Length: 185
Image (cartoon, rainbow, N blue to C red; front, side, top):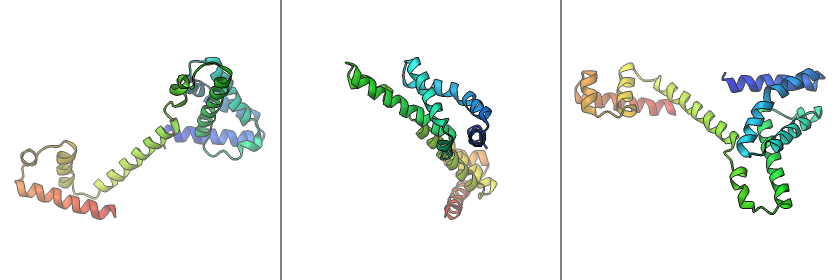
């Protein structure tokens, strides 16, 4: 388990304890996430007071024990809720000010933490899949694949490194590719 998953599991346990009546669990949940949310909000706007207000609004909404029952991923919920609160505040402020909507473009369209997390998770899963596939190769096939595909060495250099003739190296790579294709199906 990675650190994010562990933290999310701890947060889910705290939220569950709060729903069951433990007010101290809510305080621990607030302590666990308030600084992270303040930092995230500060990336979206330079208005620190607005960020503080929105973070508190997110936690106030979470105080409703019935609302908390539907939350599965606490970290994602808190980040998305804060972002939505900030966007709502930007919209409200744009109706009350003379500023152009374009002035808020960089703030509203900041990188989405959830998409970044999903991309990282997909990369991790793809890495696991590639490692599993590479595990089906013989050690010599792995070495040839590493040299050819990862280090982008030409066949002549691979021959010298592995002390094999040209056709043997090509056969290793070819048979390895066939084995990977079979394992991937």
